Length: 293
Ligand code: NAD
Image (tube, rainbow, N blue to C red; front, side, top):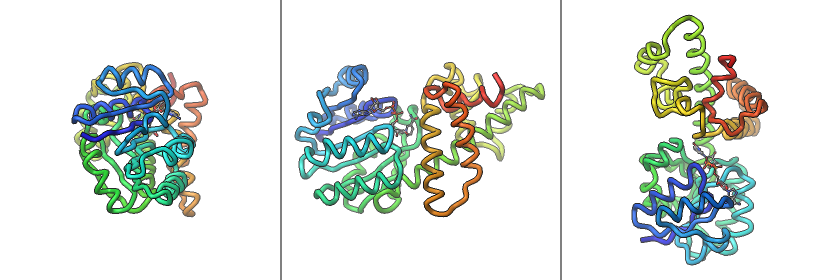
């Protein structure tokens, strides 16, 4: 049993922490939202009164926070100065490469082993313990982190040094944002052509256009029973977070002189959708805007 501090118990963090509890670890969690803490306690974990309090005697510290500014704040105000010196630090949030590298440099300077380990697989993958982890950091830190990532995920890839996990994640999510829009456009057009969504799905899900946005997250109700389209686009992975990740991808593209045109257009569409008051909706809800309802 390892003593784990888990900071950020939202849509992803809570089910990930639950899997660590199921595997027999001790989890002391912290979140700003009371109901998130209650969820952890109901699953057998302990609730801390602050991020600093959660670090008490921690052997592993895991963060699952919204953005780079939250990770910088939690590491700057709590983790670096209060985590036990032998603790392994794992940041699973999706954040900008620059913040990831800055936080890792501070952690390394303070003597910690740290990895950035953002995930793919959504809330379903977090619940099932089948996430993909993209891990940036040194070999020793990776080897220390792997047994815990194995509990929460199925595919664990060491992508290189600090920040490379985030680099892999934004490349992945740029594909996801673009492919979701492609699936929306085709299924919307199908309906307007009088083609049944199930029939189209039976073809596309086994043909050359097959992709995750279609087979796991279809943005129209029916053919994929667990997709957010069947629960009125309740998130899941919010439109605001997709816009955030597409922004991170454009930042990275600019910083390398790379021209990612479809990524830029996908960002424009997601910003428009978020600007219409849809920030908390699942990102597949962009179907409504594309379809025109
Ligand atoms: P979320 O908003 O549901 O959860 C984030 C949690 O962090 C919230 O409960 C919030 O209260 C908490 N928090 C914020 N600041 C805090 C602080 N200073 N101290 C303690 N807690 C704090 O977000 P999520 O969907 O769980 O996503 C978390 C990260 O994972 C994001 O970076 C996101 O991009 C990434 N991600 C999400 C999904 C998904 O499907 N939801 C998939 C892959 C990656």
